[in-house]
Image (cartoon, rainbow, N blue to C red; front, side, top):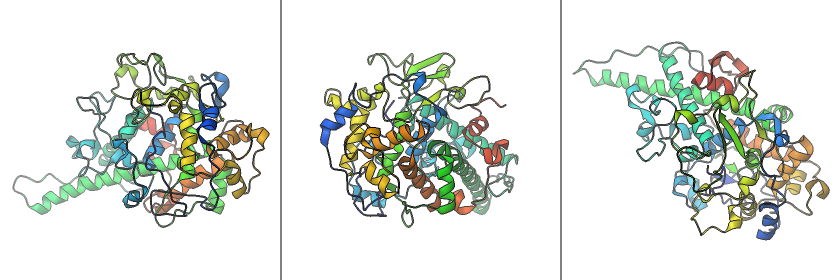
Amino acid sequence: MTVHGSRNRGQSAARTGAVTGRFGRMFPTIEPRRATGQSLAEEFGLPGGKMDSGTTTDEQQNPALDSGFTFLGQFIDHNITFDPTSSLEQRIDPDALRSFRSPRLDLDHLYGGGPVVDEFLYDGESQQTKLAIGEGGHDHARTPEGVALIGDPRNDENLILSQLHLAFAKFHNRIVDELRAGEITDVFGQLFPDAPERPEEGRSTTELLTLSNYYDDLLATAQQLVRWHFQWIVRNQFLPLVVGEDLMNDIAENGLRFFDPSGDPFIPVEFAVAGFRFGHATIRSHYRVNDSFFAPIFPEDPDAPGVPRTDLNGGPVSPEDTVDWRYFFQADEELRATQAKRFEAAINTRLLDLPIRAVPGAVDGALPAQLRSLVVRNLLRSETQQLPSGQDVARKIGELPLSDEELESEGPIYLWYYLLKEAEVLRGGRQLGPVGGRIVAETLVGLLQADPSSYLSVFPRWEPAIGGAGSEFGIVDLLRYAGVLPVE
């Protein structure tokens, strides 16, 4: 399991406003927090330090958030932080990022560059309208070496995320089948036309192009349905759970206050390096994957063989290790889904001593022990990116900052630590507080609004019609439709 958000991903934002590169600043006028160096980061982040919460217990659970939303958040993150060099494990000149496309919630990590550019992602027997899936349907298509044939290799870095990606592929494939069968409509309520007859040998180029265009249109129509359902879940289920209904209603009524994604949208570093790293606090130390498989996120024995599986690392999946989504999202009245760890300024202890393979680019024997802590890495990164303090951001958005007593620390504090402590103190660990919530919600809603192809831009009154849930459509409905959860 490679740790969510542990890469640099080319983050180095100029101290300007809406820059044209991939990363910019939501609060460009706030001065950076004074760097305090590695010693304070270690005081917070080493095993036994201020942010060590030990092994996850029932008392640390968040009753308002199912554990699957941790991995849905990671899936969202990988969608909007993708760049072509991420698989090369190298830092990038930030100026070079300006030639990359704008970030969108468009599932490019599912679809890649399309069947012309990334033919390996698509199923040839369906005229490349469906996504390739491994034999038996319990895993991705893979190379002989076990490499998943998916649009972003990061989505195979842990078992749960890998299986979630597979579920989205199955969701797409069923939509293709049902569009062709006339059982569902496109996003505008129109049935997809019947396929033209296959031209006999020797027929005209025009007839061949007509058939090719039909399959191109079928793929595009299915992709639009999948993307809009995904965007609906982000806007109407994920965000209300994470930041609260009140904040979402405020943004709907009054608009964005601090994030201006007009022109070339960008990812604020306050979001990428602090706000959306709230997910690290929600990771449990162990998960029940199915009735017979309960495992830690990392192996108890670092020398343990990969087969049989002993942890949640990515890679090939056997039928016995497939995810039972009832343990991750509440879908069965008779079985309570595992809950995420609560929002708090403390991280499960396994993330404070990462195995070497969980740190991208790390070489055994060359990585200092203190840099095996995800907390230390996050805090040091916030300084290299010159993030403002949490207190200064609170003042900027019109909130009374937490006191030193509430923060259990003196002076200006790391933004990431602040938003976790704020969630703990002001929201009882159930959701993000006003600073963290504002950063996360404005970024994701802003990206949707800036995307001319999103449902918010094209058809704001659109509601899902698949699965029969209507405006209540959520991740469980998507998983049921994909065939990875039993139908009620």
